[in-house]
Image (cartoon, rainbow, N blue to C red; front, side, top):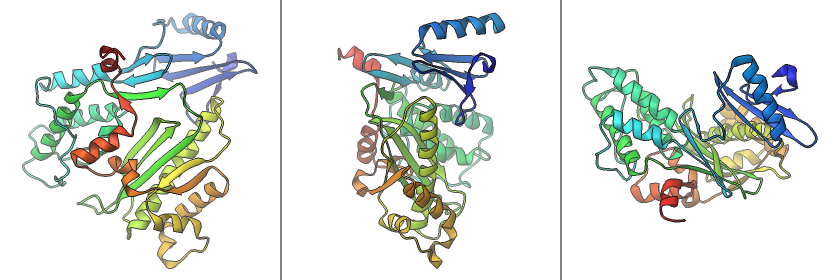
Length: 351
């Protein structure tokens, strides 16, 4: 690829690009699976022939299935889901006839590292959690619970396994659910971030959660336990701000690689007034010295025009679904704002 004019992306080493004044060709590589995209059919045909002469590749035509991801393209946009992967997961665990659950996790349940009797074969739990982690590629709605369950892979118990089965019963509710990349989106990044202070009952570490939208389409999300203990909720929120800022910067670089540029900063919504005040206060105090690196990072990106910090009410905070288990009503409300839907049910309904 390099000898034929392609350059590796500085943001993703599996991505290679060849650009001219009027065309762009993109090659995405994962081991021996390759996706080609671009606006110059002749260039795509040329690189396909080149790869075939070198490696004897198999051309599968228009992208419809890739590494378990189903791709449905219409004039409105691109729908991504893992419906077959989900059905296989349910079938392999005897859950196809199970009663569906309205949420992936009971919001009143607190799971601990030391729980009831350990599993006789913990590899079953580990394998299930691993498969669920891959499913979060197109299912942001299960990201928090899967992150939470992954904390127990070293010594899973019966309670942990029952929590995994609840996730499977939730997936049974709508196995074809996925994300939609709208073709009519405005080219603008916005993000919501939140934290659950001391959310881990075993370590008292907080949980960071965020989601990033390109226009109205969700393109990135994360739920992750913070590396250190935060002594206040404002510090936990600020660490979450820093993590989201890093993601926005990386996405900006990645999109610039494929010629998507922005004429205004990415909007970063936070529901913590104290965290926003720390970001706007140039003077460090005793209470903020433990997060001074994060303070410098967020302020630097805000000053440079990469991000713009904005307040958001707690009731409009979409990122809640990435930091904690929610009641059925709140979970449904938050997920409805993520822009997820099942394209197969839409087509069957005649829309």
